[in-house]
Length: 402
Ligand SMILES: Cc1ncc(COP(=O)(O)O)c(C=O)c1O
Image (cartoon, rainbow, N blue to C red; front, side):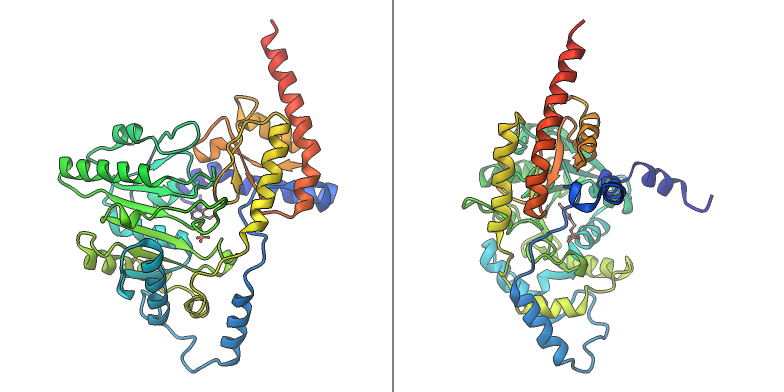
């Protein structure tokens, strides 16, 4: 067989998100795009801020010699410096440009972090539900992903974390605002978490690193903010990107920032830079590094997403769905009215509604709605969501009746 066994297995069980996306393409061919309500992908639909276009146009008109060349594997000095300046304001800790490595998106950032930190067999602890690619990323670098439960509202369960940490734990990976739940981990929870990590690092005689994956940190509503892990725990790294807050996921631009007081900070930064090279990223895309150097702090208009969230949360609750009103990101994670979320997702599919089963995120009994879609998709889907709920309730009743 041409394909390695492990990749064959991964392809087989790989991402529900992709499966649903492919299903959507099929359904759209049969019924027409406007009759299919596709909530499967977290692909931002709000246009990038105007400044992205104006900076791009300016750069393209002034193409200077060497602009397309290789560079330091950690990125362009002007981009690293702009990011360090902005982060020093946002995160409450002063960073130098050297503390920043520009990456190919948050995904590239997480991969260079895990490549740098993990010895074979070491564990990456993650609160569930979690972004499904984490398992693959840990495996890419010889690590093992270990999920620990959160509370029913998806906030951090510190006792479960404490029980999950072992001598093999090297990384605790959090994602806030969270994909798939939209939940934000509070400052109080991060405080407790950092106390726990300090204690356990001391007990086991080896540092546990806190990694925060934050591509949704600016997609927040109702005055919520994402607390800074840097103000809580020095052995910490941030991986993030401009994919969601500037709506440019295809441009693959992000960065990793290392806390200036992390142990072995210079070695860590050296490892991240080398990993960027040897994983084949070499450096983050040059043109977009120049763009983001000029627009730190910019963000899409989140009012669009808030309106969509409000409409869906209210309509789904009216239809009998049980869900939290998420403070961030652009996902809802309602309870499935059938215990078997895959079965319920199939009922929705029969209504031409595409969502992703929670099982795919380590959150069985739920399903994920990515609401970064046009308003008519939301409005057109509502009767189908209502009918699917009625059918699920009938199924539940008939299965209870002897
Ligand atoms: C939680 C989370 N982390 C990382 C990524 C990857 O982001 P990027 O496209 O910037 O690599 C995503 C993308 O959806 C995500 O949801």
